Image 1: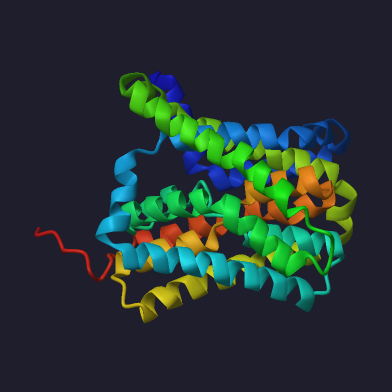
Image 2: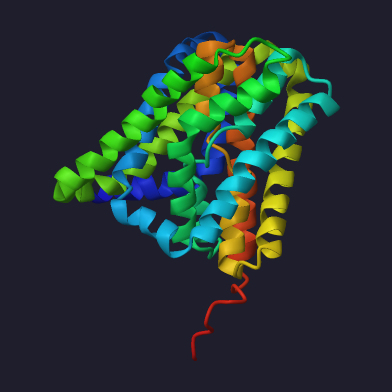
Length: 316
């Protein structure tokens, strides 16, 4: 188990580069990796089950203790990110499938790696976990509604099918993992060190499959989509922090809100795009998976070297 933990720690530490490697692998071997794309919903379900194993009922207690911070963060996430995605897609005149892919990313809940990034950034991890949990639980209702509102004029949106998919891919596996941890906590505690390895491996495989299925599109419009993704993520991080400042949240909470707003569950966007639209619509989500882990790691490194202003300074 020690070996698995060391490998999992390595995977977590080099998450961004591993995801980038998956994208390169998909680009170099498109015919082989394209066969992975149809299994994206199954892979994401496994990842979300692992996320559920890491959760406990006490993670939701912070909602009662600090409701304003959690509600502010979730509200910004489900308003700023979808609106930004829609605006950037139209500003750059993306083709309809890519525009829908961008909106799917913007309407997704918090990313599965955001809690780790907040921890490394010396932010409020409890707030980050609560925001991820609450936004994930709201996703079956809000994500289809937002996609229907923002993308229906571009392409027909199967809102009912999106709702059922999110129940199957996200909510079901998360609740199953949560219940399993409550039922056999000792067993799950022994498995937890391996969870980062499962999540990282799943995301790397998903990115490789989606990039492989869209190799020609990546070479043709990849730079434009990459620009859209970078703008989306950067503006999300900045606006998330700004709203937290305006809301007079402490510095650790500002860091948590910024990361939670800027980092989306792009794997869910990829799964929904593949299942209900086309592999091309999944391209923004795949590139977002690569970029937001890189930008999050850079931001965490920057903040890790700066003590939060509201944190107590340890005595020598």
